[in-house]
Length: 317
Length: 115
Figure 1: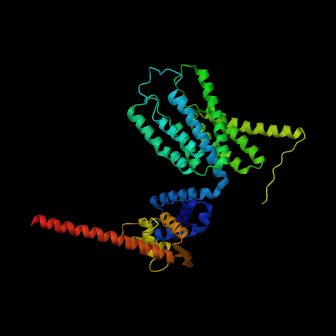
Figure 2: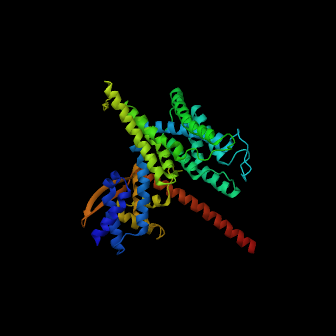
Figure 3: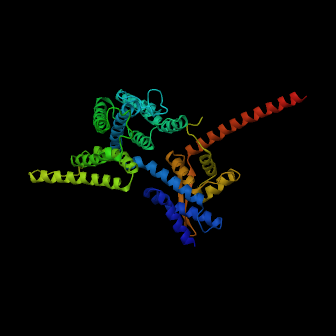
C-alpha cells in the first residue's frame, strides 16, 4: 500500500518542472509519506494534491523566463505591443466607431458614439504604444497591464447596461494574451526600439487592415461595424505566415526573432482554434499552416535547383 | 521596518527554525504548534516558502541524513534570516503594544462612562 501511495505522490509532483523534482522531489515525497504515516492514511488528501498542482504550476511559470531567452522575450514584447496597438486601432475604428456608416436602428444600446466600453481598452493600448515610442517603458507596460482587469469590468458593465455590441470573449482573450506577451520582455529603447516597434506596427496594421477592409468591401458600405474581424477564415493564415517567417528567420540565423515570431503567433493560433465553429475549421487552419511550411520547403527546393544553397550553422561564441 | 514582506506561513517557517536546524516534516509540525493548530502548512506551500527564503539568503540547507530509509534534509536560519525574523518579531510586538494600549484606553473610557 505504501508503494502505491509513494507512486501517487510521485505522480502528483509531476506538476513541478523536472529541475525542481531533481532537487526537491524525493524529499517532498518523503515528507508527504511521513505525514500520511502519522495520520494513518493510505491515500493522498485532495487538499494535498491541489496544493501540489497549484504550487507546481506556479513554479513552472516562475522558471519560464529562464527557458525563453531574454532577447527572444524582448522581441516578442515588441511584436506583441505593436500588433496589439494596431489591432486596437482597427477595432476602434472598424468595430467600435465606424464613422463612415449610419448607426443601425436595431442596436438597442451603445456607449456614447462608440459601441461599448471596450473602446477604453483600445485607447489604452494605443496610449501604451505611444508611451513606448516616447521612451516611457514603465508607463507603457502599466497601461497594457491595466487593460487586463479592464476587460473583465468591460464585460460586466456591458452585460449590466445591456450593450448589444459588447466585446466577444475571443476579443478579450486575444488582447489578454497579447498583453501578457508584451509584459514578458522589455521593448527596445531609443531609435533602435522605435524602428523595431514601428516595423512591427506597420506589418500588423497591414495584416489587420487588409482583412477588415476586404470584409467592409464584401459586406457593403452600410455596415456599421464589423464583428470579430479575426475569425478563423479571416486571420487563420496569420500563424501560417508566422511559422514561415520563423523558419526563414532561423535560417538567416536570427534566432531571437524566429522565436519571437512563433511566440507571437500563439495567441492567433489559439483564437483561431477556439473561435472555430467546428473541427472542420480547425483542420482547415492546421492544413493552412502545414501548406505554408510545405510552400516554404518548395521555395527552398527551387532555390537549390537554381544553384543556391541555404545552410543552417550553429554559431559558436 | 523590514524591506521584505513576510506572510504568516513564511513567518512560521522562520520562527520554527529559530532554535536550530529542522527537516521538512518537523517544520510542518512546528508551524502547527506555533500557530496553536490554526495553520497546517501543506508540503507544496512549505517547499515554495523554503525555495523563496533560500533565494533571499534567509535559509540554507545545513545537512542531510537517511533515517529509516528516508531522506531528511535539514534547513537552518542564516544570520540574515535571524535578523529579519528579529525585526519582524519587534514589529509585531510594537503593533501588539499599540493595540493593547488602545484597548486599555477603551476600558478606562467605558469605566468612566459607566460611573
